[in-house]
Amino acid sequence: MATHDDCQELLLARERELDLLRKIISSIFSSPDYFVALERVLGEVVRATGWKFGEAWILSEDESALVNSRIYYTEEPSLSGFFEESLVYSFPYGVGLPGKALERREAVWFQDVSTNKEFLRAAIAARYGLKAGFSIPVFSGERVWGVLVFFAYEARRQEPGMIRLVSAVAAPLGEVIQRKELEYRLRQEQERSRQLETAKNFFFQNISHELRTPMNGILGLTQLLTDEIENPEQRELLGLITDSGNRLLHIFEKMLHLLQLNRPVSDEINTEGNILVVDPLIDEVVQRYRMSAIKKKLSFEFIMGASQAQITGNADFFRQAVDYLLENAFKFTCSGGIKVVTGLVGRGQKRRVYINVVDTGIGIAPAKQRLIFEDFRQADEGIDRPFEGIGLGLSLVKRIVDMMDGDIELQSEEGAGSSFTIFFPLVAGLHEYHGMLAPRQGGYRSDAEGEKRILLVEDNFINLLVIEKHLEHDFAVTRASSGEKALEAAQKKRFDLVLMDINLGRGIDGIETTRQLRLMEPYQSTPIIAVTGYAMDKDRESLLGIGFNEYIAKPFSMEMLDTVITKVL
Image (cartoon, rainbow, N blue to C red; front, side, top):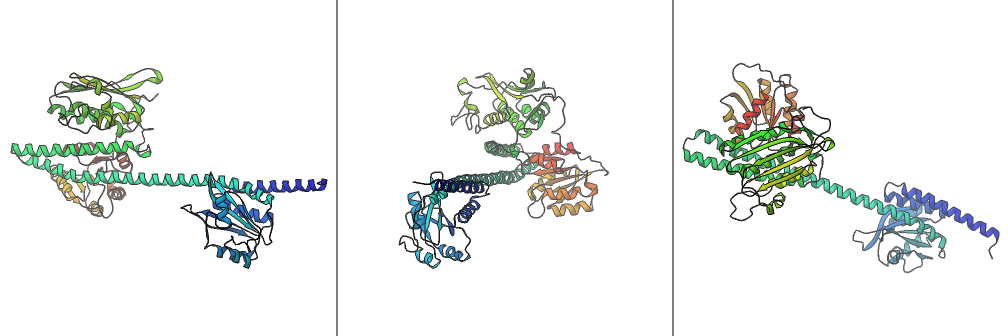
């Protein structure tokens, strides 16, 4: 029968054990990673229990065996040699002291490892005077992640208290390991996602530039030939080339928009925070369709009823949505007309801006009115359908409207036309137009008499030729095929306007050239227009923010170039 003193000693021992557990567990959870946690556990156990050597074995990547973690603890300098000689070992399931704990998923005790035939390092242990040894599995969830092994100088029978103590330590260690593994995998996934997003962004920008630059050359040369050729048949053929080129580019742009809108929402495609004034933005899009209305002999009217109403969103996406609605209306309307109407509906916090596009086109059958908002779907999908297209315009409108917390409604009658209305929440309390979308002007002052001087910076010879040919009738044009040559020309002559290509091949790019130009006193207020094949969302805002006065994306018509030049001059 146990005496009172025995009971007291037992209680004191358990209290010391609990204090040690609390200390070790606190040390584990404060560790920055599981390798530090391993080292702390081995050290605390060895120091507190008198066992001489602790080591950790972890499961290999293929989970077929335990390999040395290279983490150990001892206060006996001579035992570092035991660690060094153990590095060449690995233990499959059921092999050796670590492997048996891996297989059994429980503690394993060897009374004297130096004489135990199942202990593969018996001869090494004997040389270093190691006797008793035991192993404890460490779990990460349901999986054995690794095994802790401890050794003493003397042979010992199994000690339940020691096994209980180390097992109690192994449990929170496993929790930390599981958490750190999850954090590590999450960081890996985030890094892979970041790298993938970076690669996608690079692809979007690069493919946009690589297609737009040669297309600008093709369309520009075609326009030059059209202006010089008088033969009606040849002019008609050139017109077909222009139409086909524009159609190809438009299809490509829609595919890029679809890819953009399929990406995770990020700062690149942020739709929040920017204040947009509805009517001026819509008017920008409407003006591009005036000539189409004249050519098709359609009435075309824009009724501004939204006053200076403001919404929040992405200006590029908003323009795209309106553009696709108008493109759809003009495509399917052969007679009659098209009307764009803006206005306000609702009261209080439910007040909304609406944009209504009405046409007198072919209309849409009720059964087809839902599917036209799906990717690559059209009301008429037969191989002999009368209207061309890939079925993306309206689906892109729907995506943009959804992304900007808006709604879209369709009313249509087959043979009688269609009415598309998009709604966006009105910005509460904002009624003034702050001009956030207006390009920053450079404060141009003319000091030249007669022709104005333009510095044309472009490394693509065809584009250089096309733009120069068009401008030379009204301006004195100086060519520069690189950023370095542009800076050299700017030092010799004062220019009234700079047309700056962004991607200039080797050497400094258009952005750096512009930065250096802005450091020159004569060019601090000179209008500089960015000419680029990079036409992704945010490109315009980014370029305007670093010193450009305007932005024009390739390919562009000469009329568009004239409009932009007139705007800044």
